[in-house]
Image 1 (tube, rainbow, N blue to C red):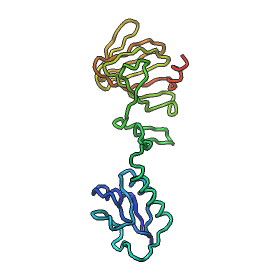
Image 2 (image 1 turned 90 degrees about the horizontal axis):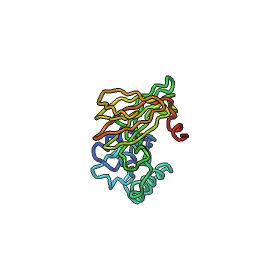
Image 3 (image 1 turned 180 degrees about the vertical axis):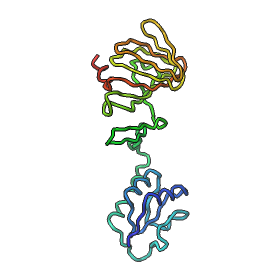
Length: 226
């Protein structure tokens, strides 16, 4: 009878610090177990002599002797794949599978919950390479007629002309915004509304992080048309 290795078994092995997971030719490894093993750096192996302090799924695991061991094609593929991934390609950079943030979505209702603590920011192009400004859009034109995201400014100032309406809520630090020659200051918990067509200067002498909402959602396309 075939034995089944699932993701939970791989996770348990990794938590014990085991990097090799011994299997035999009668083992079926689920796709989720294969993916998790790759993420956790756990390698499946047929050579029980290398197991040492590692986990084996079968006490009767066949050892090398003078008899040939029957190995199915899928097992050969998995072993070769593991060797290539963990050894030969160890120094080759692979595309990152990480997403810029985690969100729970309900396709039926359209509900989207962005887990704010998982959001990673990228550089925001202000037109001035000396500025230290970063952002991440978490609600886009693919989701709504509005867009929303996070933006940070660190010891920087930049000018911006809005071809859209914007609402901001300050999450951390303080923001200075200059409009029509007047400078206003907003602090943690404050909410700003900036009308369409405004020419403003955004700045922070220290650091500010705020959450923005714009309407319409395709603000980037509109800016490119200016």
